[in-house]
Length: 322
Ligand SMILES: [Zn+2]
Image 1: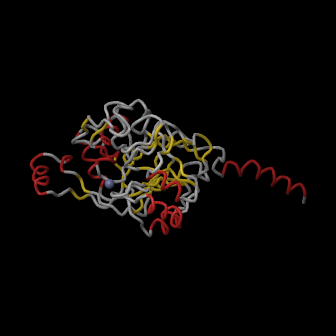
Image 2 (image 1 turned 30 degrees about the vertical axis):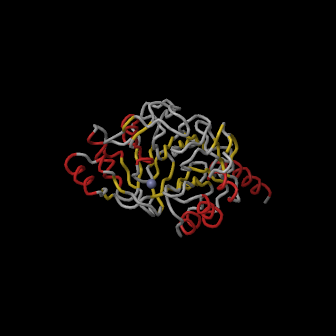
């Protein structure tokens, strides 16, 4: 039946490309760090832009100069891995590139709101978090005239899809106390005097699936966990990893390299949260943790130079900007 076969072939040619993620499309990843072209101690913030235009800000931290930072543009979704000030943003620079790489400007307080909330209010972004963080963010949005419904839950094992990007949270072995400075009043003062933080559940990492098919793991601050093998690789099949390497507070370079080489096994990695001057004139600094991590990892490691956009295809191959 040659005519039927021809018809089938023609149909397939028409329909298959529509059913598959478009292979030529890339996810753009832009670090919003402390100093343009460098990888500096406070750098955490990354903007992921889906091929469909959805823009996701991960851990704004202290290097996004508040809601007015001109590098932000449209922000549809804000992700906060956990409540520590260097991730949620307790303070920030007064403008991009203020201060130096070694001594960043952190002169603008974001208390009691957090920088994440201030950006969400200005950009009308959704804040997607796990554990028991959503009610905290909902209350902050409401207290500042925003819409509490913009704080959305994605607890372990579940996921939400916002703007065509599927967002799931995964375990991160870390702590997640709310600093009493965000609570304020008599309660905040009493907690501060007692040396205790507010409880909003466990810290998290994220797994994102973009509309081109790319699956990305964002480690957050974490130690080595069995879930990096079982959930992040085994279930979600992450191909790109953003891995925190700073040591002391989170995996150091050797532990982070083990996570990448033996557990997550992605196709490529973006180093993050080095807590050091990682680069000088855009080149990895000899003797740095960043260098040790790159040397220990078996797949390409991309250094997040502030303002330099990297593009990744569905297989997490960097196709531009690396
Ligand atoms: Zn932390």
